[in-house]
Every structure is written in structure tokens, then in C-alpha cells.
Length: 421
Ligand SMILES: Nc1nc2c(ncn2[C@@H]2O[C@H](COP(=O)(O)OP(=O)(O)OP(=O)(O)O)[C@@H](O)[C@H]2O)c(=O)[nH]1
Image 1 (cartoon, rainbow, N blue to C red):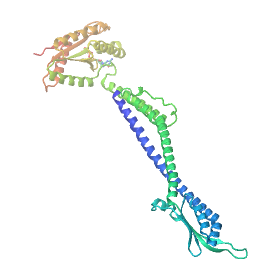
Image 2: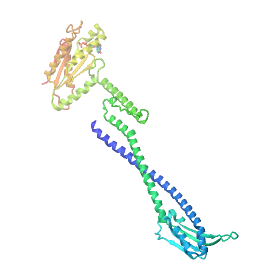
Image 3: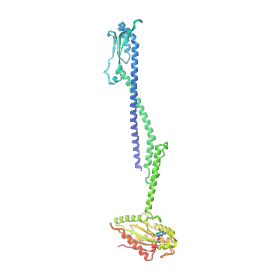
């Protein structure tokens, strides 16, 4: 049993590890998808706000720049352009008159465009707005020049990435915390109770499955884990019932129903096995046939019921005379018994037979119509041989049976023995 516990510990590690890795993987994927969606929406709103702000800036300075273009005043144009250029997100500003001559221009060196900058802001970097001058209320506004503006893609991309890093970072931390919570929950509510069930099953004695240390899973009485424990409990009890039925049938198949000692079938099996052992080790083996004397007369005189009772008492008395560890007493049929004594030579068997005869007489069961005595007696035929390999036990049985016949013929309540040379 104890050898299984380390296996349980391994399962613990594996199940928790698998679950932890799976949870982390799912949480990371979810956080990546959620982070990407958030970044996409951020890019959209950032683009809209850049366009709106730039258009507003251009609208604000349009009047002053138009004045500079109308007056062809480069100093004023430069002041206005510089005001714009001072913003971090502007890389190029130029103010031109209506002939296309540049009045003021400012430009910062721009790095080669990156694919990300192109993809995010490529189409909203350049602006060109006509400068309209309103000379007189009676005349319509006229175009006096243009203002050109290019946004700094490096600055915009850096701003986007700063936000992106924080979004991805927060998503990963969220995923990690969530998966840690989930792993802890899974371990406490699922893995640990499962390990308890596993440990209880591992400690179950297969010979007594119903005595398993049924685990108590607090908080799981009505859920799947609680049902699992109940199902295992039910299964083990059914298993126990099956074992008991098997043992009962096994006992029935080996024992005599009336006396409770071994039956004829088991005697045959036992003798065959012991015979082989004796042949292999060249050891002696003895058999005693035992028959109650004048039992027909006993039945006729005292009745069959008392006859049954007497058979039981005789069987018990005989059984007390044998060594249950090595010998076997069986009911051979009717009022006849047989005893197998492995390792006993004829002297040992005779001594045992004498002991049995005395034991039955000591019961002092009255037998008004006994041929040998006024109490119930038995006659016995004893034989012992050293079997040789391949030989059958028939000779031993026949000799013992013949000796019993002899004992009957010689007056009953006696023992006859076969001495093999
Ligand atoms: N009560 C009872 N009697 C049984 C049982 N089995 C066999 N007998 C009886 O045992 C008797 C055996 O009679 P016999 O074979 O004639 O032998 P016996 O009367 O003992 O005479 P000897 O053996 O020659 O001394 C029969 O009357 C059977 O009915 C049993 O299970 N119960």
C-alpha cells in the first residue's frame, strides 16, 4: 500500500503542472487578443484626435499666416511657422505665397519611415491648407498662399508604443494574477480532493474493499466529486458483496453441508496434491477410513434426526483429533469418514486412529442396538505408503478400504492396518 503513495505525489505534481501550464497558455492568448483589440481601438482614436487637433491648429493660425502671405512678410511668416514647429509632433512647416514662393520653412531631420509608422499614420502625416485673405467686406476671400505641414511620424509612433507597452504589460500582469487565482482555486477545490480520493483508494485492502477509508470532502457533498466518492463507495460495497458470495460458494463447494467438515470432492483434490508432494519428496502418506458401526440400526432405533445430530458430533470429535494445519478429515459419504495424514507412516497413523476411536467412545452416545458396544463406536482401516512418481493413490485407498472391511468383519469397534513392506 505504502509503495503507492509516492505515485500519488507524482500525480499531484503532474495534474497541477498540466493545469497551470494550460491556464497560463489560455490566459496569455486571451490577454494577447484583448491587448491587440485595445491597441487597435487606441490607434483609431489616436488617429482621429491627431487629425482633429492638426486641423484646429491650422484653422487657428490661418488668419495670421494669410496676413503674412498677403503682405509678403517673411518675418511674420517665420514667427507663425516657428510657433507651429515648436510642437513636438510637427516635423515640417512651410508658408508660401500664391506664387509658390516660400516665405518661411522649418524642418527637422526625419528618419526613414518604419512599417509600423507607415501602417498606423502614413496617410495622415501631410497637410496642405490654402491661406485665404479677406480684404474687404464687399469682396470675396481670395487665396493668397498655402501652408504645408508634416507630422513627425517618429514622435507619433513613440507615443503609440509607450501606450502599447503599458497596455500589453497590464494585460500580462492581469493574466498572470487571474491564472494564479484560477490555479489556486483548481488545486484547492479539485486537485486536492481528487488526491484524497486517490489516497483512500490506494489504501484500500483488496480483501476488504468495503472497509476503505472513505474520504470526507467538505463542500463537495452535492457536486461531481461528492458523487464520485459515493459511486466508488457503492462499487466497493458491491465488490465486497461479490467477494463474500464467492467465499460462500467456495466454502459450499469444499464443505459437507451437514457436518461442516470437508466434502468428498475436496478430499479428492487434497489427496491428489498431497500424493504428488509425497511422491516428489519420497515421504510417507497415510489414509484412515472411518465408519460408524451399526448406524442403520441407530437410525432405525433413535430416528433420522438424532442420526444427523450424531453424525455432526462424531465429525466434530474426529476433527479435534487431527492437525488442521497438515491433515484433512472429510465426509466420504453416508456415515463414512476419511482422514488424510501427509508425512505419517503406519505407526503415526495407527496412533492417530486410536486417538479417534477413543474420542468417539468418549462421546458416550448410547446405542441400544450396537453390535460392538452399548455406546456408539467406529471401525477403521488404516494404510500408509511412500508413493513413487507416476503412481496413483488408488492402491492406498483400496488398502485402507479393505482394512476397514476387515475391521467390520472382525467384530467392529476396531482398527485394522495395512503394513507395506
Ligand atoms: N441420519 C442419517 N443417516 C445416514 C446418513 N447417511 C447415511 N445414513 C445412514 O447410514 C446407514 C448406513 O447403513 P449401512 O451401510 O447398512 O451400515 P451400518 O448400519 O452402519 O452397518 P455397518 O457399517 O456394517 O456397521 C444407513 O441407514 C443410512 O441411511 C445421513 O446423512 N443421516
